[in-house]
Amino acid sequence: MRVYVVLLGRAGDLAGVTHLVLDLPENSKLADLIRALGERVSPVLAKRYFEGHYIYVVHVNGVAVDDPNYTLRDGDRVVLVTPEMGG
Image (cartoon, rainbow, N blue to C red; front, top):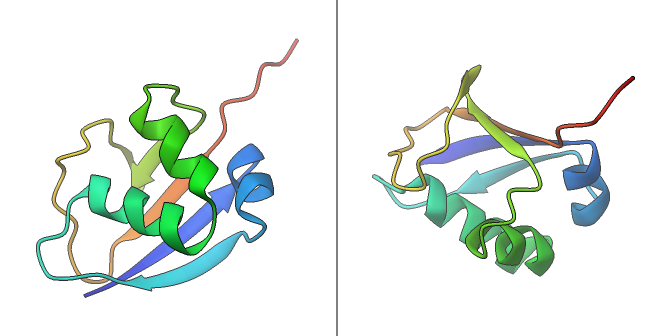
């Protein structure tokens, strides 16, 4: 299945890219996508996520998802955005 990934803010800085397409096995979970990002674009993204340092918020098709066991579907758009502090 094909998943469209957008990396915004610090997530994009860490990855060195802001948009990419990942081909994943059917019934892949959000955790599988994060692992694939770690292998293909930036080990730091996956390491920080799995160590509990959520340096970004994950949205799937516009809905915030914090469950690593969330099942992705073909065509999903996953956005990783760094929450920024403002004044």
